[in-house]
Amino acid sequence: MSTVRRAVVVLALVSGLALTACGPAEDDASGGVEGPTASTPESVTPSKPSKPSKPTTPSASADEGSPSGGDGSSPDPEYALFPCSTYDVKFTATLAESTTGSYLLKITNKGTKACKVLGHPVVTFGDLDGQATERGEAPGIEDALRLEAGESAYAGLMGGVDDGTGKTVDSIAMTMNTESDLEQTPLKASTPGLYVSPDKNSVTAWVDNAEDALGS
Image (tube, rainbow, N blue to C red; front, side, top):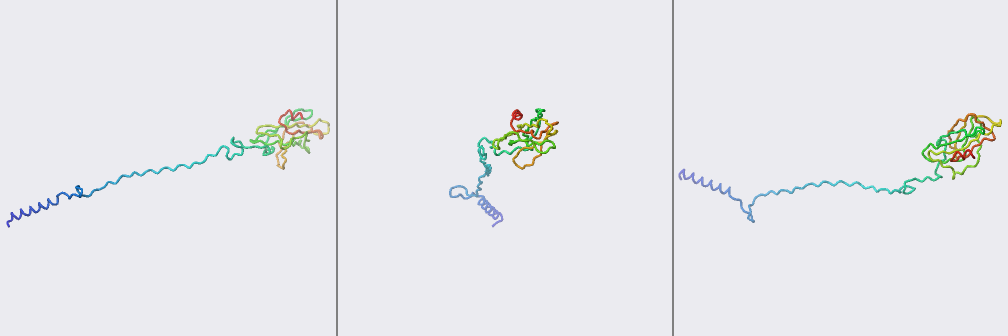
């Protein structure tokens, strides 16, 4: 075979192989072109976690835990009040009548809570021994005077007429009846020239007004 013919045959074979390699892909059973297909995954958006709900605290009713009921006020029965002491009050003594040495004694509740005023004030005269004689009866502890914060109580003190048997003092001291062994700091008041008769000095029980205190 000549060199020209051999070259033509080689070119024909190469061309046939090239056409076979570049030919269409075989159809699948459904008539479509078979080939690898890539499926696009569905996009999934992560859901935000829901916020936990705050625990609910049951609301207490208006009268829950209140021994007095729904108005919120606390009971304050008379028997629950403490007796007033000198730590609870401020004290003054004012001359009412010089001839008989009469003084108006006044206490005022300086605290924030009520207290009970029991019996008579315990009054001593300067450096003299003993204390003022109690005049008249005082209510029992159940009926004792209730002294609210800022309120006052009164008692009448009488030194007695100058009969030459007594002595003169320039001050008095007062403590409260608490029906206990509570130690109190005596409250003092100036009483210049107060004559104290041994047998005629006296003091009334505490009352809620000055007129009754001096008139008893």
